[in-house]
Length: 218
View (cartoon, helix red, strand yellow):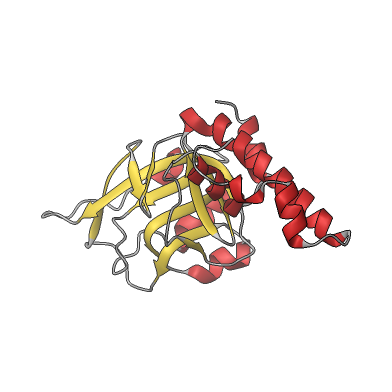
């Protein structure tokens, strides 16, 4: 696992990475998780955080933000809950100040204006004004989490753009990136061929387009 792979992922769009995941039969698409602004981009290693329903007495919402390394992505599993937020403007302010690479939430955030103003990459299932205090509680960090049907482990490679987010398992990231780069190169040749005057059918046939994402095909 090399941080150079974060740079490789930045050069690839999420749709292409999704196609590579499909080809390799890896369920890494974080379905339903979208950016607050379509201009947002993120790429980095997952720092996983787990939330659960509040207990009696009520637990803390957590101060994990101080432990997140610069460049990492906060990946918060709140079970997809949209009725209790787990991220607001103070978290955004700290994350942006300390160089955290972005936030991905299977759940809701709030205070969205600041994230947009700062250009801080925020991805979530939804947003709302309703606080999570006394409704959810911090369960821990460094565990495997579920984000939009994708399992995310600490250190997995996260990539987000206007189309959403994918999680690439660290143990398979070299393979996924290689396949994605092959797909990207072929699709670039297809675009160039169309711009040069060839028909789409012709260039797709030349590049074996229909095999690019098919499972098991090389």
